[in-house]
Length: 232
Image (cartoon, rainbow, N blue to C red; front, top):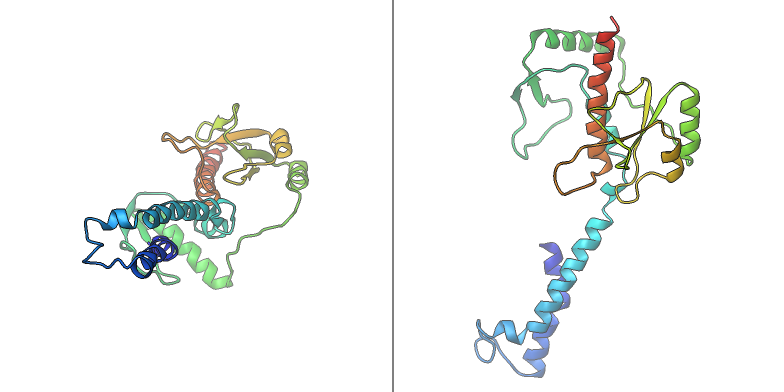
């Protein structure tokens, strides 16, 4: 709506001012409800074209296609337990204050584990943070992690990529995400131990990095728990 209003100020309004003060046409006289579409046809056409171009430019250059800061919001809320959601405390577009619960799981055993973990955190005053490291060369960082025993998995829709839910990771594992439009660097794809794709049944063939990261991390968490259970 704001884009349409902005574009109309640059197209429709000048077209009307030209016809009002240069040609002497007035609303209710020469310009009526039926003739306005013809009289202001050039301004209306230019407004539609400019609005479409503006919206396309905004969405194409939206920071969500390359911004990884949302990872820092997703990682701390990955749960350490699973279960059926019994109650949701947040309404549609409702306000959320820091520290308020979002949902409750219907499991007394899991809730007891959560309470025990909270007591331990309160006793030692621990602070939950996300460890991170910055490196301009992703290939160099991946080589270092491989030397430490990590499996390198590239999240990419390549021809020989395996389905995320059929993939059997070898923990510890490092997952690499690329830009939504350009993807990962060819050098990183070539050295990766596995190419993993997120199955999509619709017409879309890509997800933004935050959405893809949340899906992959939750699936890795599930498979990690299964691997720990099978090791006993």
